[in-house]
Each structure stands twice: as structure tokens, then as C-alpha cells.
Image (cartoon, rainbow, N blue to C red; front, side, top):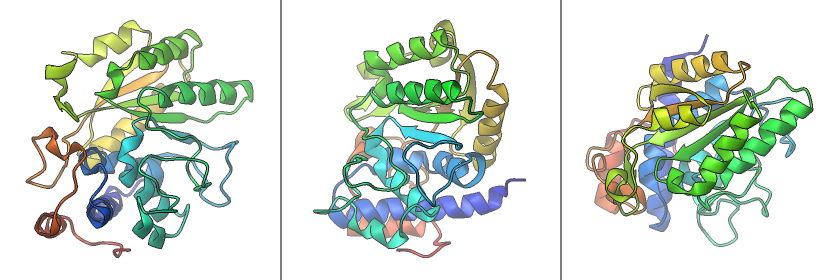
Length: 281
């Protein structure tokens, strides 16, 4: 049984990590990171079968995660550290010179938990399909989880990967789309948006479902349902509704927090809205 209240407590600390990391260097992407904190927490602390120690690049015998929209690295680094991949104290090095915690996840510094450099939008999902087909070829009954942004899916490579996954019946894949309706230049609907994502993914041959990404119980239920839909000949796609910057009151409702850092007063206001539960780094 997954303890949802415990996950909510972890997610609050993860959100504190995010705003503190970005504030410290006045650089980074807090909006999408905050909005996806419940998803990452539920995945790494409740749903996904993974081994932080010892870390293995080949991920044999365990579930694997790919962050395709790699700019939301703050939330990724926080859950990796908090779940035991590397010391929590290392979060203080985020985006600093010689840090393993670069603005986008990278592999050349050998940061445990990161198996592929991502952030060149559209490319991570292709890697995830490769991992999924490899697990099938190896006879592994494990899952490949991938997260993409709804702005990211304006990249044509995403749809090539979806077409490949469906054609090859990669039914061990759970692809989540962070549908917050925002991207760096504005609302997705004003730039190159889709009125309804579900029928598009269904037309490509995916099993599509919806999930409230800012409600921990709904996230846990959604991810568990997605796992139950695997093994039936189709990749599973979750359309996850989130709010960029959630739950910080002055961040929600705007695309502007996609990639700017809070000042000192804004940091204090944000932290006051998110209880410290595990201890700040």
C-alpha cells in the first residue's frame, strides 16, 4: 500500500528544494519543476521499481525513467537525491561550475540516476523507445517511464517516436505528457497548440488516459492504472493536467515562471507556502 500522505510530505520538501536551488544561482526552470513534483515523487517513492544503490547504467532488472523535457532538472535532481542516488547536500551545487548537476541532465560527469543527456527537446522520447525495445528483447518484465512537455510535443521527433513505439507494440512504455498549457514564449494554444491531445495519441496507436498531476492521490492512482494497462499491445500515454508553478500563488496562471528565478522576497513567500518536512539541504 502506498502512503499518499507520506508522498505529499516528500513532495513539499522537493518543491522547497526546487525554489532554493534556482534562487541560489538565479538561473533555472522552476515553473514546470514545481508543477511536476507530485508526479516525480509518486514515481520515485511509490510506483517505480528502481535501485538507487548500486546505480547501474544498463538498468537491467529494474524500471527506468527518461526525462525528455530536461530543462525541469531541479525536480529531477531533488527526487534523485532524496531517494538515495547521491547526497542531498550536492543539491547546493546546482548549475555551479564543475557541478554534476548541470542545467540539463548530462552523463559525462557520471551523476547517478541520469542515463541519458536530455533537454534538446524531442529527443528523450526516442531514447525511451530504445530502452523499451531493449527490455523486451532481454525478456524483462519491467517498465520504461518517460515524461514530455506539451510544448515539447511541437517537435516532430516526438511523433516519430510515438509511431515507432506503437508499430513495435512497446506496451512496456508509460509516456506522460505534462499538459500545463504553458511554454517559454506563452500559452501553447497561442504558439502551436492542440485543442485535444488524447485523440491525436490514440490515432497513432496509443492507449490514452488522463490524470490530475497536482493531486497526489490522483497521480498514484493514475500511474498504477497505467501499469495495469501495460502488456496489451499498445504504449500507454497519460495526459497529465498540471499548473506551472503549483502551488506557489504568484507563479500559477502564467508562463513567465517557465525559466526565471525568484528574488529574495519571492523565495521567502514561496517557502512559506510549502512546509519543510525532511530538512532543507
